[in-house]
Image (tube, rainbow, N blue to C red; front, side, top):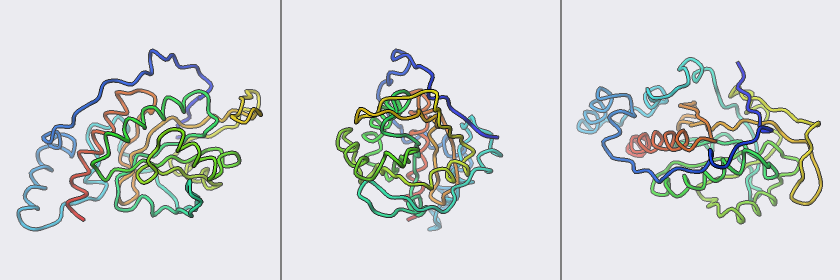
Length: 245
């Protein structure tokens, strides 16, 4: 099964405007970490001096709209990419953190501006947590580390908490997540430098990755309600992850 998003479709601005800021009540962990039974177990473990279970099976939420079997079938392979500073980055970037993973490219004229707008809001809301954002470019030919660095500065991205990655390994990563990628030669788009290129049909999903690299959840990056819900789940899990470190 492959999930495939069509970035050539038009999205009305009125439908994609970000919603209001959200609060994250502490008691929401009762629901988001799998119900009162798990919450009670976490409290009991803390009281006994035992570390909470931070495996993905324990952190995975019951609220996900994605079937558990499908999430279990997704995986992140080993890879080697470069970040916006030209540093080599491997799959270990996901270790010991909850991560919201996105796939974008800097010349994208359709869904990426919407996704980036939502992620910029999450950057602020996740500031006091250990949850990080990782964006992987689907256009390594044009999105060099230098281009990503300029993009980060233009967008106001804090690259200590939001990492921009690029490299040929993007396609194996997408394959491991059952996500599709297509170069649409019939639909030429204008690049920032004035040239043209084929549009790239790529996922507009956000993927929540656990501290053991397993996939916890996935949601639309275009609908603010879905983005906000994913962030709430990540924040509720974050306290459990931090208490185990």
